[in-house]
Image (cartoon, rainbow, N blue to C red; front, side, top):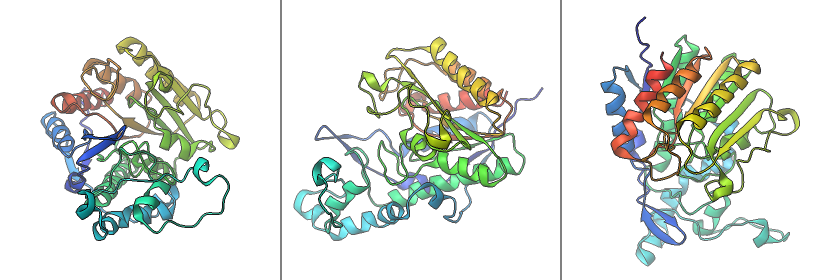
Length: 355
């Protein structure tokens, strides 16, 4: 039997986002979510024989079902508004970074008005100081959405599976907020597009090293899209810190449609694959007809962003497990930041999923 070569969808525009730095505990550190990730993955999947196509442009109709319009408008305009302000001259900051977070602790029930300064307004939408916006950020994030939608189009047209080389990643983007190096939720967009294309029940299985709080939030009270995640335990001090626990199982109509499997630091192949297999069994038992895989490869041992110790062989095996459920699948790129091994890890998963 010939190996199935999964089509790969990408866009050169996804390289245009350059955050330059992340601000962690008040210190500007070199960013790890860099444009070179695209080229590392593209070289590996091309070398493995996967056919590559560029993303087609799509309208915003699915995107606005995932994100609130005010956030989309802010992201689209933020870089230019910042450029027109005094920030580059005053402090040398060319990227949008929040100065104020309008949390309930700050407003304390007082009536509020929209902030005039963008460095204050930014905190309405971005929930950390790690996720900066600059020239090209909106264009790259929007192109990543087009990658996800084009891959979904291929699956709806009859492909067994298609891979969307999305960058920046998306699974931490909530309905009205962004963070965790994510701006627009590509996996949620793919799930919504599968639903619109005729799939009554879709599952999103997230194997990134960190729980996709954005995807979980978007579908938490819905029964038509399941969300399952295997990730490092947030209770050990890892992002997203305050959510991603096993007792979060959905609400209202979505009760039981969320499943989190947090794992201890240092977890390697066997327990990680057991968790992936459990989520695959759950998808089958729940009668889903379509699948989205949030493919983060930052659970790998060499990755700087997590303490998990998963190998390339386990990523290939995870692909075999998730491909083995037999559902039409859109595979969406999330994390993975160790450039020397990144492409090989992605290619290993795709080879496994293709059987």
